[in-house]
Length: 311
Image (spheres, one colour):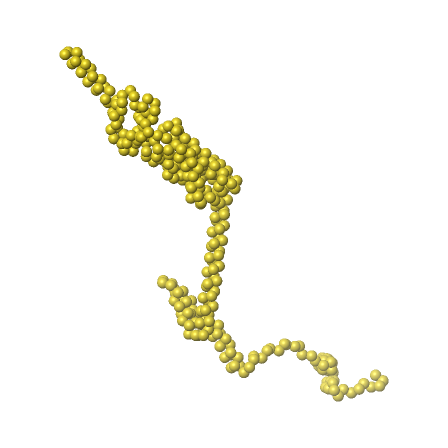
């Protein structure tokens, strides 16, 4: 009887020791892969408490959550010969825990290496514009390249995205100059288009004012109101040119025609005979002033006597 009690006590102690090591709890986001004598069980264990055969079964837990894996920056040359550094991010999850543990040693490390290789390959096949703006097609290409080996490893690729593209400084300056030139071109086109539309509107306004003279006067008054701003002591009053022309025509009509042009001043020309007679009169006056002199007789230059024959 004592032997039976001892055996029961021994069995209870062994059970208390073995039971905790045989009990496993599988969490909701995990699956358990059972190895019995080294052979894998065909069905993974679902979430909940699971009892294993002591010293016979071994269980490996596989995380079924989505894994976010950053892909390190990869340097490469694009198809248009531009050196770039590109990094990406990979989202994947395990769909077959048996394959993920049996067919590949470390599925996370394997996915990281395949992602780096695929990223370098996609850089060499793409152009710089595709890396900067057309990334959707590149994402699809990366996902297709990663899905081929991942399917055999029991891994599903959710999505792959290029995170950043690092460019050389010289390429950044060239792209900045290109963008600046393009913006300047668009600004000039917009300005020219505005000038064209403004010229059409001004032409229509000119025709309207020409048909209605009162419109020109209203426009003049509006301009005066715009110029005479608040707290401004200066008033600009437009003076029409037509009024000056009216005054010019009125002045011309009052003077009776065109104004006479001033004649050019000319020096008087004296005849030769008159100059000679003036000299003789001056000489006679000098002789008259002398004492005893006979007063000369005035002789006209036209009736001068002819000189004597013997003179």
